Length: 130
Image (cartoon, rainbow, N blue to C red):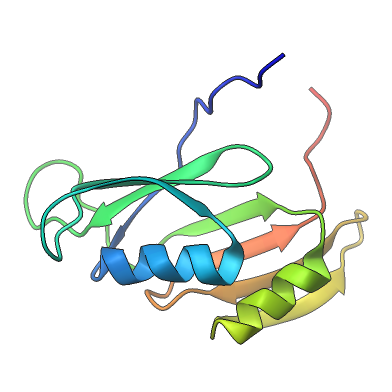
């Protein structure tokens, strides 16, 4: 049985979308699945997360209804091996804002900022049962 495709896509804008895509792949382990645009401008990109789901991003737009401020995004991402992911993020130059720690609800987490200033929290908590 195949997993259903994600139906909710967190979305962010970047001043240098191509550099941010490379960083998210190298530092955190996202997989680039689609990048559309010409030159430095990224009209639309999709990055998949190994455990399911993903994000969408693009170059910041100055007009239209879909204007997002770069560096204002925050996301919690479920991960299995927090220590290995933290080490990978450090090696790729991520700004670690909180090293690995245990939460009072049983998760093992760490938090980092990407070069655009977005906040990423990675942890083992998979959410409340549905």
